[in-house]
Amino acid sequence: MAEQRTFPSPEADPDTEAFWAAAKEGKLMLGSCKSCGEKHYYPRGMCPHCGSSDVELTQASGKGEIYSWSVLRRAQPPYAIAYVTLEEGPTMMTNIIEADLDGLAIGQKVELKFSPTEDADGAPVPTFKPA
Amino acid sequence: MSINGKAYIAGVYEHPTRKAVDKSLAQLHAESALGALADAGLSKNDVDGYFCAGDVPGLGALSMVDYMGLNLRHMDTTESGGSSYVMHVGHAAEAIAMGKCSVALITLAGRPRAEGMATGTAPRNYGSTSPDVAFEFPFGPTVVNMYAMCAMRHMHEYGTTSEQLAWIKVAASHHAQHNEHAMLRNVVTVEEVVNSPMISDPLHRLDCCVISDGGGAIIVTSPEIAKSLNRPLVKVLGVGESPKGQMGGKVDLTYSGAVRSGATAFEEAKVKPADMKYASIYDSFTITVLMQLEDLGFCEKGKGGAFVSDGNLIAGVGKLPFNTDGGGLCNNHPANRGGLTKVVEAVRQLRGEAHPAVQVANCDLALAHGTGGSLGTRHGSGTVIMERE
Image 1 (spheres, rainbow over the protein chains, first blue to last red):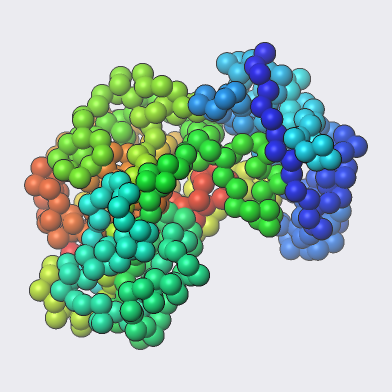
Image 2 (image 1 turned 180 degrees about the vertical axis):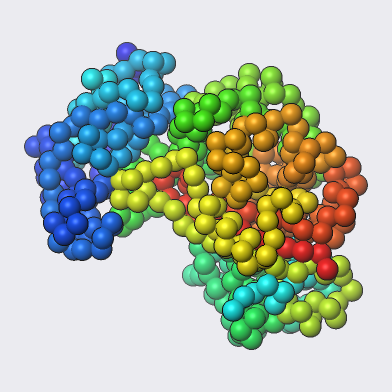
C-alpha cells in the first residue's frame, strides 16, 4: 500500500460552506436542481444545466467507478488523481487511496472514504478507495 | 459579417532566448514587440491597438503600454492561457474590420526557467475565489496529470497507444534538428520516447514539452497597410474560439474546444482541413496534438493514433507537416504558453521563410491552433486559418 500524501484543507465560502459542513459529518453532497431535476458537481448557487437558482444539496451514495486516472510518479509520495463517475451521474475529481497504484483501471468500482486534511479544523475531502 | 480578408499578419517575431536570467519580463515583451515591428517594417508609433494576456506584468495592458510608450485607441486583454494569442489574432482582425485600430500588436513573454518554476508537476492554484479550487486543489491537479488523464481515457476508448503518441514527439524532433534556437535538437525514436521515465501515467518525460523562457510578438494590420509594406502577404481567412469545461459534472475528456473553434474557423475561411498544407498545433504534450488533430477534423475521432504514426507529421515525409520549428515539444514554450509561437511558425511557412529543410512546398494555406488552461479541467481553444496571397 502506498504512502499517503497530505491533503491541503479546502477553503469554504458562502456558496460552499454547507457542502463542507456535511463533509465534516461524512456526507458527500451533490448539487441538485429543483427546476430541471439534474444533478451537478461541484455544488454551486445555480444549476449549470438549466440556469435555475432553485438548487439544493442531496446526499450521494458514495458509490462510483473510475472514469480516468493517473499516478504522478514524480511526486513524493506518488499519488493517484482520478475522475470518478458517481452512480447518481456526475463525475468528480478526487484521489484514489488505499489502493495498489499499479493496479488501477478505468471502470474499476470505488467507494467514498473521506480523508482528513492538514489544518486541524479543516474539512475532510472526498476521496475514494477500491470497492 | 466576417473577418475573412479584413486583416493581414504583417510581422512576427520569436525571441531567441530560452533562458533569460539577464532580462526582465517587461524587457522580453518589449524586445519581442520591437522584433515584430521591425519584421513588418513598422515602428512602435504606428501601433494603435495592443493585445496581451495574463503573462504581462502589471494591471492588464496598462504597465506594458506605458513601458513601451504606446499611443493607442484600442486594447484587449483576453486571457485564455496559452491559446490567448491565437484568439488575439482573431480579436485584432475583428477590431481592424470594425475600424477600431489599424496596426495591432500582440505580445507574449515569460521567464519560468529563470525563475525555477516547477511548471508541470506542481499543483496549480488560481486562488481561493476561483469556485473550483476547493473541489480540485486538495487532490493535487498539475498540468501533467490532468493531460495524462485525457490520454488514459483516449487509450481506453479508442485503443490509442504510447507508441502512437510517441510519433508526435519523433516528428517534432525531426524538425527541431534544423532549428539553431531549439532547446532539444536530437532526433529521437519511438523507443526512446516510450522508454523515457514515466512522469504521470501514461505520459513519459518525452511526451512533455520543454520549459523555456522567451517571448514573441505578432503584428496584425489592415489590408491597406499590409499592402504598403514590403513583405509577403499573409491574410487572415477565419478564426474561431471556444471554451470547454467540466459541464457541471458531465466530464468528457475525449474531446476539446477545438471541435467548435475549428469548425467556426473553417466555416469562416471557406476551406476544409484537407486543404491545409501545414498546421501548427499546440503541443504541451503529445496527447494535446493528437486530440486537437481529431477535433479540428484532420482525421476521424479516435483515429488520431493511426493518423500521427509512421511520420505523417514530418515535413517532406508525411501528409500534414506540423510544428516545423520543433514546437513546444523540442523548440520553445515561452511563459508556458505556446499559442503565439504556433502562429509565428505558420506565418514563416506561408512566407516561405521556414528552414529550407522543413519548408513546405507551395505552402499557401495554414492553420494555427492553441489550447490554454487545462484539457483535463477547463480550457479555451483558439483557431486561426491563414492564406498566402
